[in-house]
Length: 125
Image (cartoon, rainbow, N blue to C red; front, side, top):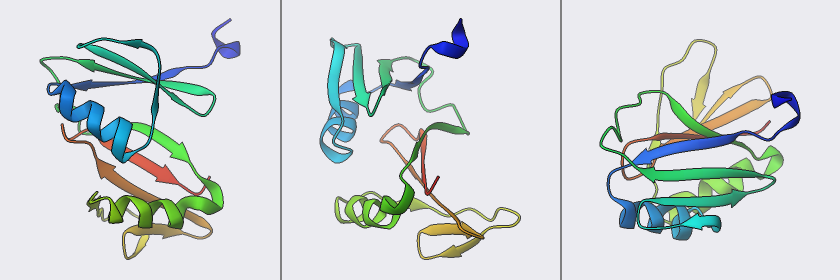
């Protein structure tokens, strides 16, 4: 049954007002469903992203959510950079960096963090 149901990314934050500003204004996601002082569910394409208040926010050192943007990756990197989002740069085997975009063959990827330090990933898949 689970193979037929869309999964949701779930991201913990401590500062909900800052998270609402980042996910709603900077990333442009729209609330879809629950929207309280402790939880906001955002629509992202055909999936949902749950942002919730937690004392454990910011402790994840791995990617929390990924968006496959296809050919729109470079445009979204420029838009986010213009909005003041700094990008992360990693030395990963098999990847080389061109500005803020990591490449491997035809695959391109970029990482950035939300205000809590959660790692978010966009790529050309």
